[in-house]
Amino acid sequence: MNTPGNKKYNLVAEYVSTYRTAQTYQSEAELECAFIKQLKLQEYEYLPITAEADLVLNLREQLEKLNNFTFSDKEWEAFFCQRDHQFQPEHC
Image 1 (spheres, rainbow, N blue to C red):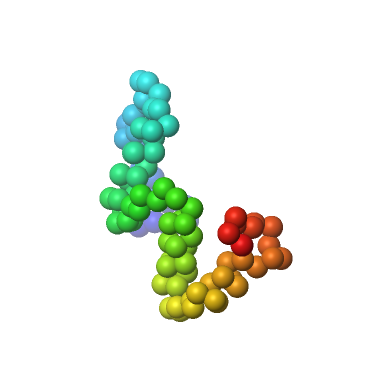
Image 2 (tube, one colour):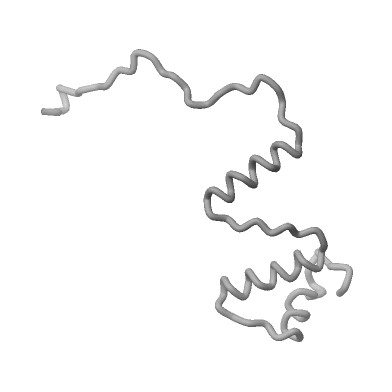
């Protein structure tokens, strides 16, 4: 029975880390591949985006999905190209 004066403790005699120390450094490409692999294992979808237009399209799709809303092209341009923001995409 645990009472204020009678505390029970577990004592670990030896701790063995599950993490390994790397013997060599990873290149940036190796690190990126390992990170993508880890995200895929967590059910993230990998999209090989190589152009800004694809990135913008993915942003639009994700915002629409998140908000259960579909932008018209005119609404998207108004939203994406607001002049009061610091970030100004090239096509705005």
